[in-house]
Length: 269
Ligand SMILES: C[S@@+](CC[C@H](N)C(=O)[O-])C[C@H]1O[C@@H](n2cnc3c(N)ncnc32)[C@H](O)[C@@H]1O
Image (tube, rainbow, N blue to C red; front, top):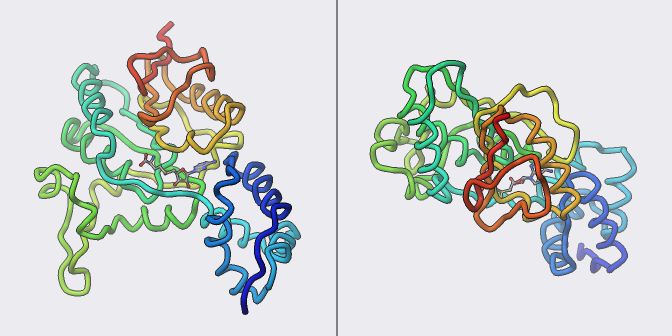
């Protein structure tokens, strides 16, 4: 069955739906992407128009379908040790830190897990047996499932330092050849859970560092301001927020001070 074209009016409905659910602003240039990514769902439900699919999504008859659509409409690109300057900065924080309470990091849009596992490798290396933990969250349950498995194709290992590869990654054999598994000691310290940054946050405790990278590019200024306000409330005094190098908090918050581009700090007093 050939799905009908997506009208501007129906595309507008998808835009409003995604904005309401996830705070994501889809530009008109994303119409073809929406069409392409959702076409298989129309087929799956034997629907021949995007309007019928919208009705299905908003009828409440199939709540899981909303999550499936969200999973398909989010962009999950990520890789190990992306934006290496942040990992150098994290090393610096760890070197200056006084031992005490557990060191807590939140990877707040963790996608398929490469970001929190990169952080975990660094913390395991620098803090060893000292207490530390990572919360890793995303809105997409599909990427979280992949992240929880801790299993990656060998090609994804290219930015992992050799020493960490040896120490924290297990090369697959037999049916797992061509893949590697993140060591259980690291997986045990990373808690994956679904959190929508566009909603009131659950009780999460306070963090020493929050990674909020490459997700605000999808948000408008109002959404950014709300998200950053919620996240700033979870930072300990003097703790850091790291955002993507192509992102900025200019005019978004005055609760955080710029340390350097893409690095912010909650005032100590
Ligand atoms: C491009 S990835 C960035 C991954 C990683 N932080 C990095 O920099 O490599 C953006 C992630 O943000 C997630 N996301 C989008 N909107 C979200 C929301 N409202 N709440 C939580 N996560 C969201 C997407 O599902 C996606 O996995």
